[in-house]
Image (cartoon, rainbow, N blue to C red):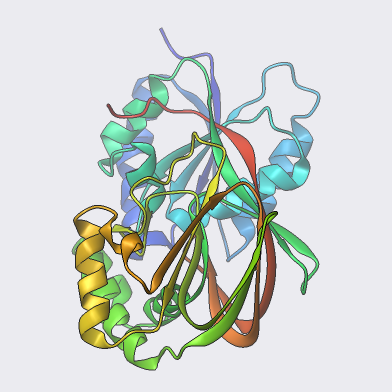
Amino acid sequence: MPSRQFYYIIINNFAGGGRTRRTWQQLAPILKQKQIHYAANHTQAPGHATQLAYQLALKCQQQSQPPILLVLGGDGTLHEALNGLQKAADHRIPLAYIPCGSGNDFARGAGITTNARQALNQVLKAQQPITLDIGRCIDHQKKTVTFFTNNIGIGFDANVVHITNRTSTKNHLNKYHANSFAYLTSLIKAFFTQKSFPVKITTAQQQHTFQRGFVVTTTNYPYFGGGVPLLASASVYNHHLDLVIMEKANAFYFIFLFMLMFLGQWHIKMPLVHHYHLKKLRIQSPQAEYGQADGEDLGKRAFDLEFNVTRQAFWFVPQT
């Protein structure tokens, strides 16, 4: 029996160095064979996925059974589609996802396989949506609101994103599924170019100022940077966000901290690492630094960001 669900599909052919295009060529015949009803839409430029998702949400506001929005691309494409749905303020359309990008941190944290055929099965087997936490960020300087699945970072991790997205070898490495090397080389370069910077953290109870900020990341998920376990306890089910601040350290201490990350959460017990687990916070960085949201480059500027937690419906069966 063919599925009665209708899938509105957004395909980012630029994600993953052409991997999304090849993935769609594999999956389209499967959808046809299974008699799945869908409409395929290909993005044309950065931000197009947001526009497509927003238009879909407005169009379907009066429908009794809204479609499922299926995204093929990387974390950035998912980020754009999420913001399109949230902008329309119609929370009935669930998001489904086939990871085809460089980092795929959302898939790693949510229990979605990076095998395209298996990920499609996780989507098609779903019978009802699941609701996950997402982050909401108010940018007081730009007067905008951004929603994120993974994390928003200022400083080192954003510098890594900035360097990676501009390296000439990124797409080449993606073709051979060696995208981790792109992040590794960018990580090394970012460490030696990233300077410490002042940052002020405001919570409901207190205010802290750090003069030697280096990593300042507000996360909803355990991973960042293509699989680095920033905080294993971060969860999309606990209605909280986690803020991790690492102060500037020498190379040996920094490598030691990264080793502790992969061994669990021992790094947050170290003197130069600070961890906050809360529902609301504000981060102010007056010095121009790189920023990133779900792996998307926010440029280099001063930041005044306020965070809280909201929710989004997703459509897949998580791996157990």
